[in-house]
Length: 328
Image (cartoon, rainbow, N blue to C red; front, side):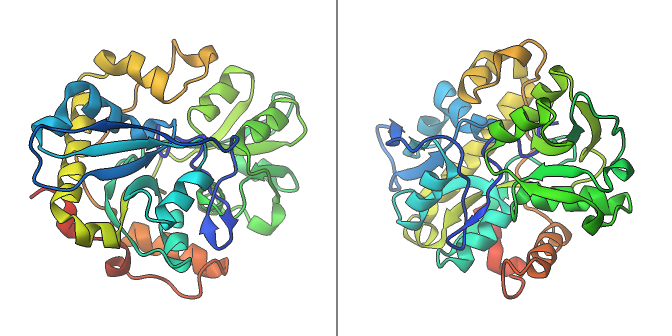
């Protein structure tokens, strides 16, 4: 699956925000698509080299921004730390992250709203997986009792892991969680048998399998989490036409990608930085039509965050979602 595919989708809590320390900080670069006439202000979107952001590049390739009359500037970042900091500072208007990130951004004082799901409208989109190390005898979740599970603490990875374990009746206190925020490090520790198991998103989960790790569970059996396209509330207020057009283009590009995945495969391999070991076998992701997360999906994340004391109280659906941004 590709359900929140992200090397960078794992976002630990740093300074009360959802931040992920993966990769070295580099100055962001940007590319701008400016139609000859535009009725709205430019929309600046922060992007990481992950598959959730692929529709932005498809739109760029196909000239959809110009066709829809919107100016979109894609601002590239090496890590979620840089990207989220830029969002806080008002240097970008939006990004694709996850619902844990949304709540922590709001807690940190940056009011944001979810405009649509990125990947994860169906369980097959954006896979997370729990895998055991190549030399391990662990083959199911129940066998994780007493074992060490590598995660990124207080992140979407942590949430997904807890949900999968709970679904199989595994008592969380029986599993020894080890926080390893940097996913390449977590992958290396798994493959070298330094930890018994790890939770990883695709494409790293697929890479781990290709290198001998054992798949013991993934989240393709039910919809546990999604990435979401989110914007600063102030940006929505200042540029509603531009934001709505940017959301529409994301949806159109996602459908073009889903209908003709082979046409964009080379673009996907480049922009999502798919490891060379799995480039021949790893499939281009598909995106559902634009839609919002459900009340139950948001409530589940909020309950987990309150139980973990990551937020003092749950945010309501209205607090987190702006349904007016979806195309009618």
